[in-house]
Image (cartoon, rainbow, N blue to C red; front, top):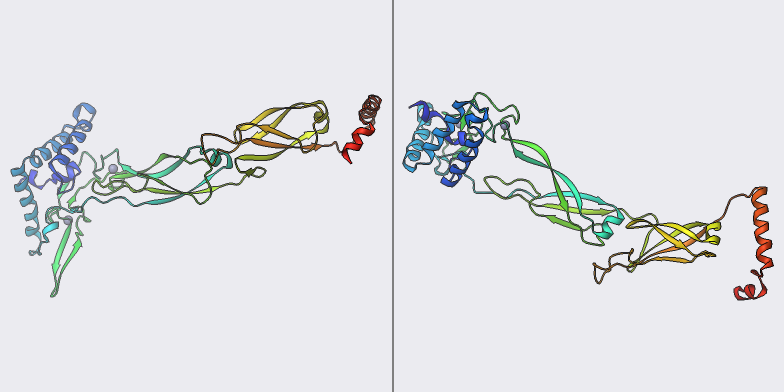
Length: 348
Ligand SMILES: [Zn+2]
Ligand SMILES: [Zn+2]
């Protein structure tokens, strides 16, 4: 057996032993660009992947190589029975979709009402950039495990059945190396966070579950990602009430501003808005901010209004100077007949 035969070409390219020719070609291309000697890699690392590709891309050579790999077992163990499917590689599984995961998203009242997209960060396994997902240092050479002949499993026969167990010599990898990648501890993946945008419908409510396709855990053997199921918790607003398509709130106005009129700031789901208050405004008057209410239930592209009810704030105390000014104002208004009998009659 030559040195080239003992090299685990599958591990070198980071593909399973049942990889298709396309997958082999793809893996080689990816590694060749990264491990090219022009890009600070050693010529040895590049030669290794070239040899692996030459062997695995030629059907006849690959078959011979696979047979030699499998025969390595015979040299080491007293002929354990072979299980057909696990003969050629440790990972013969079909592509498996990644698992779904759950996320609880807390959304503020205004964002939920307007359907503002939210960003969430989810942990993700990504291919290790130090070893290109292969688990060993690029200057190392993985060898076919002589405990399992690259199968990753060993089998033993008892009276009634065949027991298949992961190969203890290689940990089920099917190959062995001396320098594990220190970045990923030989796992081939590292943990990172990825940002996903969660689109919300307008008037999103607590308990709503949204499915983010592809935001779940990574699949194995080329399987697609699972989904992320996002459950909403909407924080209720402390002072806003929703009446059909309108949002109703209370706006505090100093009694003096109510008399003179002027600009008043009203908080809406679009943020604070300046509104002009008419002179002589009264408690309970309603300031209507057209189009600043909730998205309409009948048509989310249209908006209801925001209605702010005026609540008058009075000073807690008046000093002598203030009393004088108010007295003066009162006398002036009386002299103009502002508090005439007619007016009082209207109120009672
Ligand atoms: Zn690594
Ligand atoms: Zn092994």
